Image (cartoon, rainbow, N blue to C red):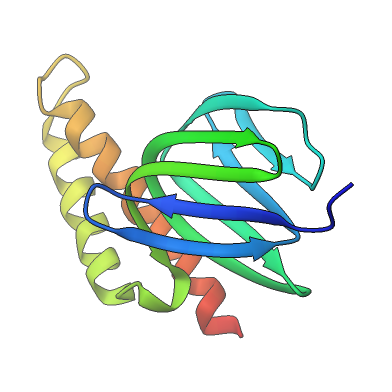
Length: 138
């Protein structure tokens, strides 16, 4: 069994990551899951959430925005709309986005067309703040 896996994270704009890693955890539609070397092949969809990988004992967190996660032959391919490392996130910008989303949601009802848009924006801002906070604690 392999001791490492190849992790590739790709957005529509670029390949964000191409590393050999020890383990990966991510947030799927059905909840959080983990992958270690030798994992059985699978494909799942991802929610807005955090992806964390360990490389040589060092944990790295990223904020992801919707996508797909595939494991096959100790290779993980993650296709997402956006991916940001914890140290790349502008915490003040994330806080401002959170405030805008909260204000908009106060004025809308779940039946409004824009409700889901602002709900997703709120979720993205919260995840970005959570992940950015991990960089600040290092």
